Length: 113
Length: 112
Image (cartoon, rainbow over all chains, first blue to last red; front, side, top):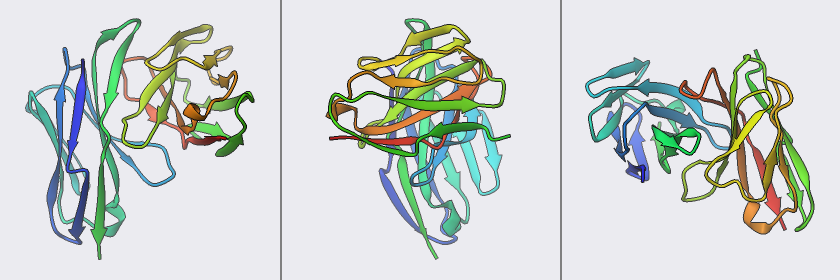
């Protein structure tokens, strides 16, 4: 069974204090690892898709990396507007008629001015 | 482009009532899906559709029905609401089943 574990569950940073969020996964045949940002009361907003170990993608203060067992979302010099819950998801093999996407519970990030 | 839109934003139902959650997208995406999000759990797939006229069950389909008469719309019907269906429901769409999914703003449902 595919599994996604995100850590920590919650993270509090001072503005400018860089850190990383972790997403550990177990999946039968990775066909994509996704990072989303979710603000309170809103839907997940797409950030990155990674497909193979060693791949990296960047967007503003965010950088996502992927290994065979985990992915990291690095946040460099965060600002208060980066406060949100960050979700990780993996797409694995077919389950019935669809390629199942398994989501983690998320890491709730708070950046304090 | 409005992207993925959902209505209503919030709904309160009594046990046994039925209702339809609306979802529409204007990106001409073939693949659409419904998820529910509960505290302490990741998003779980309820139903999905790979194109107009084609739907299938996801991980947690019991108590829900869907139909897809057009590419744009993918409504989710609760036949007889139960307190266990209290949740936040998200609709998502993508170009096809392997591409990145884009989510709507969600419908918060409370069943009393």
